[in-house]
Amino acid sequence: MSSAERPLDLTPVAPPRSSSRSRWRSIGVLTVLGLAIIALLSQGLLHSLNYFETVNQVLAKRASFGTEVMRLEGVVKPGTIERTSNGASFTLEGSGTNQVHVDAHGSPPQLFQANIPVVVVGHFTTRTSLDFDGTQILVKHTASYIAAHPKRVKAPNGSTR
Image (cartoon, rainbow, N blue to C red; front, side, top):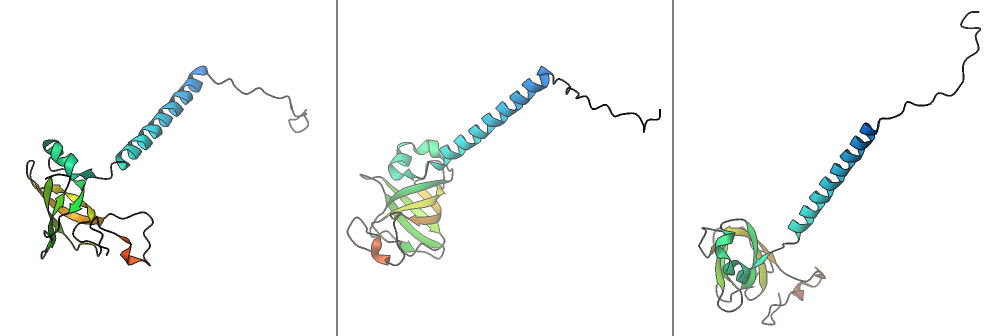
């Protein structure tokens, strides 16, 4: 009988048994991947929660901040805003007598004025200096800001802009 005439053997064949070693290896790889994803997500969330440091917080631990880039929050002291060729120079106040001098580079936002809270992105010029070099000024306002109502931002003194 030739091979063409022989009936085909259709008996089911059991798949080869996978070794327990490869099963444990797969479980280990999936566990490591899961832990890595959890670690990355938690680190991302932890770093995104720190929106800014207040003038009071920075001055309480001035040496630990050094010259690292940060977001510094305070109220613009009245009478200290000076327009410069690079941007603006002003003083940020915290509570009490806590103050930091800011030299901001770039054009300040349209709502920028004295006696309102702002966040300045930048760094201190030296490890012990109270002079802050800013690269961006962010005017703080509520999340419900509506562009159709430009006088929505109110300063602590009651003025609007």
